[in-house]
Structures are given as structure tokens and as C-alpha cells.
Amino acid sequence: MDVLADVLAATKLGGVVTAHLTAAAPWGIKMDDMPKATFHAILAGACWLVRPGAEPVQLAAGDFTLLPTGVGHALCSAPEVDLVPAQQTEAGTGRQRIHLRGPGRETTIVCGAYRYDAFPNHPLLRVLPPLVHIPAGQTPAHREMAATVTMLAAELAAERPGAQTVTDRLVDILFVQMLRVWAELRAEDGASWLAGLRDPEISGAMSVMHEHPAHPWTIEEIAGKVGVSRATLARRFTTLVGEPPLSYLTRWRLELAARRLRDTPDSIAAVGKNVGYASEFAFSRAFKRAHGESPAAYRLSHRAPPCS
Image 1 (cartoon, rainbow, N blue to C red):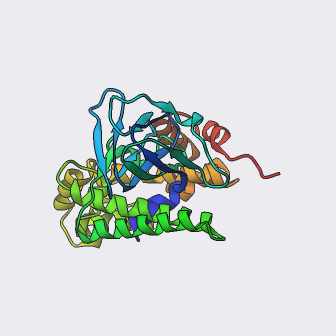
Image 2 (image 1 turned 60 degrees about the vertical axis):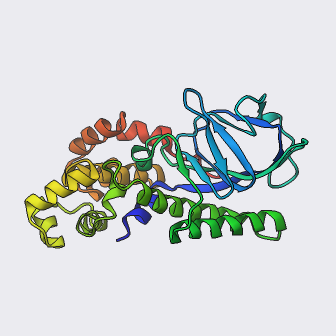
């Protein structure tokens, strides 16, 4: 079981290119808050990323940034320049192309967004910082990201048939590559399920729980599956992931339940049983504690409208 793939599939994260920006200094664009993660890949030149209450961050060609909560921010040639709201920029037909002309150095950026099911309660929001900055680098993982960005830029420039499908898939690939690089760069910075994927035994424990989430797991049984003692599993899992194994399992069960409530007509009792709860009452109580509302209320507020 690939835990990262399972999380991404269960929460339906998908990406899209929102703008292909070419700007010559001086320039500045202000983006409002949005209920999506936003990203920027710097193809050429350099710029600054400015957020309220934070120090400006200088970006160079090859850098990649992700703002997981879609917080408002600005891209600009220098922190002190005047900003133009993104809604007021010129856009061409089809994919949004923005050209800001000036006498100075030119910068090219691909901007995009990742939509989350159940935003802002996606599991990744619990492990990613407000700004993920992946500087250009020379490790194999960095080079893989750079190759994907190069392919993305080529598709945007060529505008061939099927380009939107190709670019959307490349953006999804870019997200996974970004997570791999970020996990390597920040491996020592704190506990998270993403950090746990780097440890063979802890990753194995997470995998068995993801493969059979409804099974009545005990720590002893999970430890036996991955070949470590109960005490070792409990200690290492809590250190790396930030919570005990069975707490992680409960959160994952309720994430799966949220997906089934959004995507299926199954009864609440059936949804609870599918993720390991023997009674509807126990499931409803646990779900409300995790999501802040009952399963019925969650289904009503999160189900997609039927296609007409």
C-alpha cells in the first residue's frame, strides 16, 4: 500500500494551471485569499513573494513555491513596487496568459492551484508550513521537478490539442515531486505522517492500516506485521508521526468516512461499518469530534450537486 497515493486519492487533490505570467520590471500582482493551495514555478528571471506579516522571499529561476492554504499574497519585481490586483490583469483566450510590459528584466512564471476535497481539513494541511519554498537544486529529486516544470512550460507554449489534460496531469505530478523534495529537506524539522514515510517500519505500519482500515487493529498486531516490538512501534511511531498508531488510524478512518459521505449514497451506519465502527452512535460521535459536525450535516454541506 502506497500511503501517500492513498491519501491523495482519498482526498481528491487535483491541480490546474491558472496563469502563465511574463512580466518585465517594474511589476507587481496581488492575489486574494482562495480556498485552494496555490503554487508558482519560476521558469526564468527572478521575483519576490510577499505575504502579510511575513518577510518577503526572493525567488529565482528553478524555484517552486506552494501556499497550502491559499493565503493572499503578491508576486513582484521588488517588494516596494505598486501592486495590481490579479483580476485586473489582461488575459488571453484559453489558458490565462498575463503579459506585464516594462523596461527592466523579464521574468516568466507558471502559476496554478490545487483544489482539495473538504478544504481546509485536508491531511496535508496538518504537516505543511504556510509557505513551502523549494529552491532550485542539483539532487535527483530536484532534477525530476525541474524536468516536469520544463515539460509543463513546453505544453503551455505549444498549445497543442489536449494541452489542458496534459498540463493538469503534469501539475499533479509536480505536487507529488514537491512533497518528496520537501520531506527530504525538512526531515529533521518535526513529526508528521509524511516524515513517517521515510522510516521502513513506520511506513510499513501505516501501510497495513491503510490497506485494511476497518480491521480491529491492536498495537501488538501491527508491530508483529512489521517485525518490531510493541514498545518500539509505539515510541517510534509517536516520535516520527506525532501521534500514537491507533490515534493515526482513527483519523484515517474518519477521513475515509468523510469521502464516502461525500461520494456515495451509503447510509451513515454503512459508512461507519465500512471504516470499522460497530455502531452508528459510536461512529457519529467520533466523526463529530473530528469534523465538527454530524455525519448527516457533513454530507448535506459537502456533497457535490448532481449533474444536470
